[in-house]
Length: 322
Ligand code: AVI
Image 1 (cartoon, helix red, strand yellow):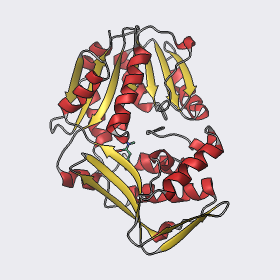
Image 2 (cartoon, helix red, strand yellow; image 1 turned 90 degrees about the horizontal axis):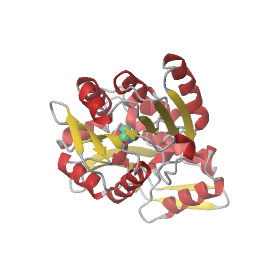
Image 3 (tube, rainbow, N blue to C red; image 1 turned 90 degrees about the vertical axis):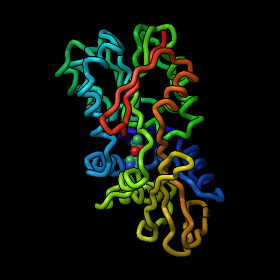
Image 4 (tube, rainbow, N blue to C red; image 1 turned 135 degrees about the vertical axis):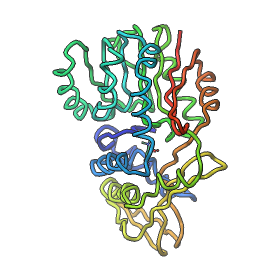
């Protein structure tokens, strides 16, 4: 799965045909689904930024507080003079807040849109002239091959925001394995934010807020599909559904048809939806502390250190590769 922090529309960099094929296959599946990466067109990215400000959406501010309260211990774990590789860097603000304590030698911002990154990084270069900065436009979720120019020394990957939760557990393991391989031999590590299992009402509210911002974020996917497929989805015909599935340890986000309807797209594509039928648009997995440590170790990481908030709602992990 591609970018799970703010990014530009994926149609910029993935072959149009491939995008169409994936989307159509998902829409025609018996349980229709669309990859969550399509939530992030320009408006979707702005709506996600608004979600991060909502009182119900605790992950962003809880993670920021953990980074602030444990800054010196985290800095010791990461070590100075590292190459900080920010996966899904977006506007680079999360990494930039850590620069004063982590003091990296090099910063590599990775995201789908290189143009978007260039703008963010050029502002940072003036603020932190001592850090060498590079932008890499790539879909890191499918491949994590870094160019040799990045160097192999002290690679510290940074993957905050609990974006790992948007991968299914097996995909997460594969992704962590790729990161471990990309670090190998460089005496580096991974600094990652992980959302923890908690009571269902708290999770339900975080993904179905009173203002309806998450609903707008989910429904906006239909506008994006209309542009990508030349389709005729009408957002007003659909309802946002988001709830914590306690058996699967995940939030499920769906769009539910308000009535029987037919959707068309280019070249005669058509799908009937019965009233109440859903399109699965996102899963957000929640982990236990030990469950996530076990997964890091399965992926080949060695020493793991964790920091959490008072309520144990969120965790920041540093996992080492030696
Ligand atoms: C980007 N990602 C970690 C968010 C999450 O919490 O799974 C996306 C999100 N979806 C709805 N609200 C936020």
